[in-house]
Image (cartoon, rainbow, N blue to C red; front, side):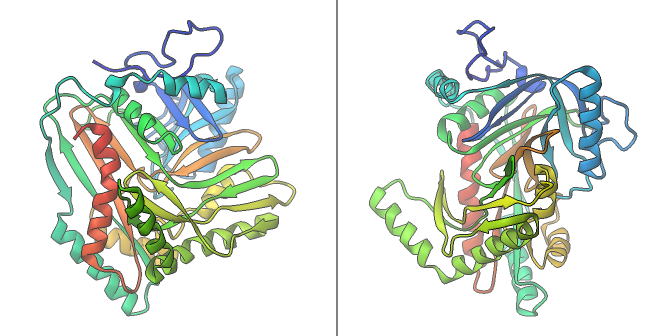
Length: 411
């Protein structure tokens, strides 16, 4: 059974009815953040890997800004709200999944609190615990350690200063995986994260599916003339014991290796945004953000944009890929990722969110995510490699990050 997404209904709906009906994640796009909570129902127009609804021969690939402009134009022709939601891949020249919803609901803060109260207890606790799925890591642990060692060799040679290496975990369950249940679990466990769900069309040999997750990282938000970004880098596993967790926070804040890793991301984001801004505020030292099973170093950056104000997607594309998901220098890091990871990232470590025709919008880095298709799910996690990194510790970091989705899946 597919579970409805339990969020607050708009005034013209039955207050007891779910905003997304059972099975609705197949044609709904969801983006819930501390500042914007949006659910798009139905697909009026789309750019996607399987060919878009407007018959464009590039099938969603190419320049995301051009794809966005075409979707806005299509929305205006229909008299729809000029809002586009969806996901852009790590390789932005690849196929994006961008959607003009048929109908769009925005949740008020009160509606969001009501949504949290209405989450069913069964959303995270199946009546019968599922059997462990068949799991296939890509690469296997030894392969990931070798990849990290290869990245460290490039750093030692001076070809890179930082490299982010990811791995994936393919799961196959006995029964179809319910994306509605998974998203409800993420909402309950991570209500302050960037929660998202984007429907995926069928591909050759693959069922239709859903790309969903709970990202801790804001890539960029534009509201009028203000821009916000919160790069994360530097990670330690969290502890359920408050005293031990506090000690780990202090250890992370004092870690020379993690502060070094974080500095690449924070500096790159600030330097990229600076030409767009009249003024920009960058804290001198990072703070921390708790993200479920892990804790990250974090630097909140705020700027006042120069006129004419750059749009949210323009800013996001200028920032991407930050050193938090790619590395430094960017081109050399992206080339090393293609060589060392061995599996395409797809939408993982890209961006997910929304923007409107006026340029406002919010894009999160698509982390802590899974691609679910029928009985199969692919999970992703990565770790930042700098001088002093240890392959075993980086493997353990990716394992800690995978726990977010594994717990939501009930495995």
